[in-house]
Length: 281
Image 1 (tube, one colour):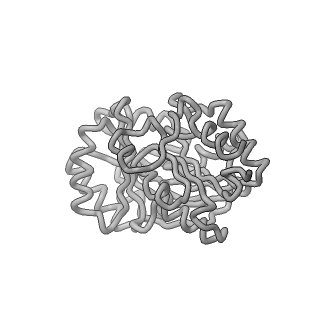
Image 2 (image 1 turned 180 degrees about the vertical axis):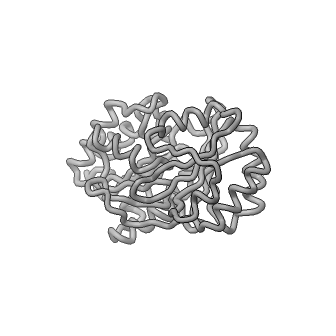
Image 3 (image 1 turned 90 degrees about the vertical axis):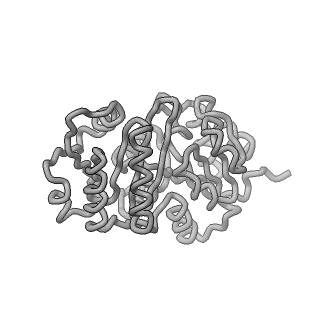
């Protein structure tokens, strides 16, 4: 009998909360799953809200991926050459309006700029939240402090504006941003309630993980039935809807689980590997 995975040609993998465990490491079983996919000629696309440079380190360490969809779908680059295959920048005027609106609510985003270098511009806050400090620590080599964010962005390509803080302060910010910018930017939430940690990503309004995956499917002439996707959070929904074989991790929130996706075991239980083992025995 043919394997369940015999028709699948591409697997799209979210990283945090999905392919990576809660310590942001790759479980050994997931590495073996990648080797299984390679043996069967299945391509792998890593699909994440992270920057290319962060993901490239993981790719080099574990030999992962053929293509990387980063910034929640605003940018697609080749794993091998780093070549930019697809990029949609956030309009400068929109970015400035978002920054000024957020400033009135006491929030300041990180601005991720330049699709090749993905530098991180930020304006220091009098009291930095724990999530912001963690983000700065992870990205300190490319972080640049600026006094006037709108002026600093004048000659730069803005990939993404990123807000991160504890959940409650950003929920009100999210409400105001949705009211004022839902037609001018895509607003994506990634929430980790167990850590009281929330990300809001604002990118070009025509971008998302799902739209990037659809672009890749057209490029590679793939049907939905030939694509499998794994995700765990709100920013993964369009990607899961685009793929024909979609799995939501069991560590996702209960409201996401009610949306009808098939549920894979938790990321800390190498859920990706366990599904791969079912499809490619």
